[in-house]
Length: 236
Image (cartoon, rainbow, N blue to C red; front, side):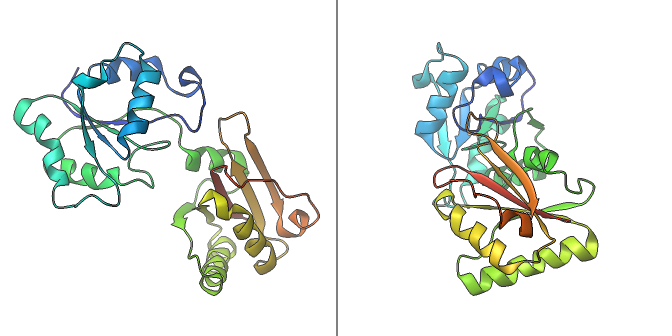
């Protein structure tokens, strides 16, 4: 196995490993002893899900989340630079470095000319784009919108203008417990003919993906999504 920084996707929710990850990923993961992770406990659970025989105590974990001092994360790559052994990045959900702090490590790796290898796995952003029926030639991911309602409405209208003026699909996310609130704000703020796709629980048993105009959504029973990660897309 080539020494590199491997970007290791994880399942979205409790999806079975073999449903979304190729066996090639398994063969790479079991040969890595150093992992950069958002949460050590969930990373351990994932690794055991990949291979029950993995000895967790033999592994080294480097935590990378919003509390981590960005001045030290370059040190997480020392096993590659000094010992010539591979390091893996494990995201909390989906693909590392996509709406994920792992991007900071990848940037350092690129600057140090370390080989970076992205492994195949599920990205809720891409999967929702695929299933929405919106323009897949021109789209943008906007992360989280402002929490305060006036700023949120302003941001939504700005995104809506890009949909209609540039034919650019707009994608954003929200904390699950605020899903109902953001849907309510979208439906009360945007044009009747603007299309909204709600994609939740992607690849999981509770998967829900539906695209309708704002006017149509107002006549449709809204999904109950208080604890389900969701992606929202605006299109025309």
